[in-house]
Amino acid sequence: MASTAETEAERTPALVVNGVSHSFGDRKVLDRVSLTVDQGAFVVLLGLNGAGKSTLFSLITRLYDNVTGEITIRGFDVRRRPSQALQRLGVVFQSRTLDIDLTLMQNLKYHAALHGFAGRTATERARQALALVGLSDRASEKVRALSGGQLRRVEIARSMMHHPDLLLLDEATVGLDLGSRETVMKIVRDLVARERLGVLWATHLMDEVLPTDQVVILHKGVVLYNGPVPQLLKLTGTSSVREAFRSVTGTKSTIEEAA
Ligand SMILES: Nc1ncnc2c1ncn2[C@@H]1O[C@H](COP(=O)(O)OP(=O)(O)OP(=O)(O)O)[C@@H](O)[C@H]1O
Image (cartoon, rainbow, N blue to C red):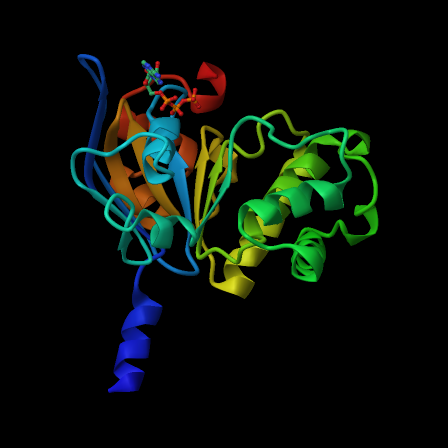
């Protein structure tokens, strides 16, 4: 019996969004959005600027209250069990949020304190987190000495300190050069493979989607496709995610051109 229970717990998705809508005044910006992120899955939330990606993240993180549908993190409803749900969640926001006048270690320890870790535990967690993103040797440097890509890596380290099951990243590579973008994406994909982390990666950049990813196309607040990449290409009779996106959304320009 115990092993069955364990198996069920292991299978509980990192994130379930079910029938979630959201309006600002009269304007509906999300319309019955549903998606699932399994443990160990890298899910790309692909949409043009204004599609509703950040609004969805604000609902998952409880910055806004979802009044329709439901959102669960590892089975915990974010409205009814907020502390259990949110302690399993890590977030890398679109805007930068590190204190550039503090060292990497100081930034991480400050965050650890917010999660109730102090002293040696905080130092140890910070060290482990920096090792995950390959920045162990920079721990005592000030954040202002880092490149844009390294800053993002520290933010990823910070989001991993409390060992979450679900990581949300909102346009994490915007403003980075190609090499840094690839490094950041590799780090996150490695975490998915190694730690069985569930990741929801919001982007408007087509080339960030790999054939092995699950992709959710969000357009004007509506999910137009949700599934594996090969199936998307087959369904649309196209040979690239860019073409498939155009076909599904009826837009002429690619996301990159529109941005
Ligand atoms: N606080 C707000 N009040 C009113 N409208 C808003 C608010 N926040 C977002 N919107 C509108 O909701 C829609 C969805 O915006 P959202 O920021 O979620 O999109 P997005 O896909 O994250 O795009 P971006 O990457 O440009 O932020 C947009 O039309 C936006 O103008």
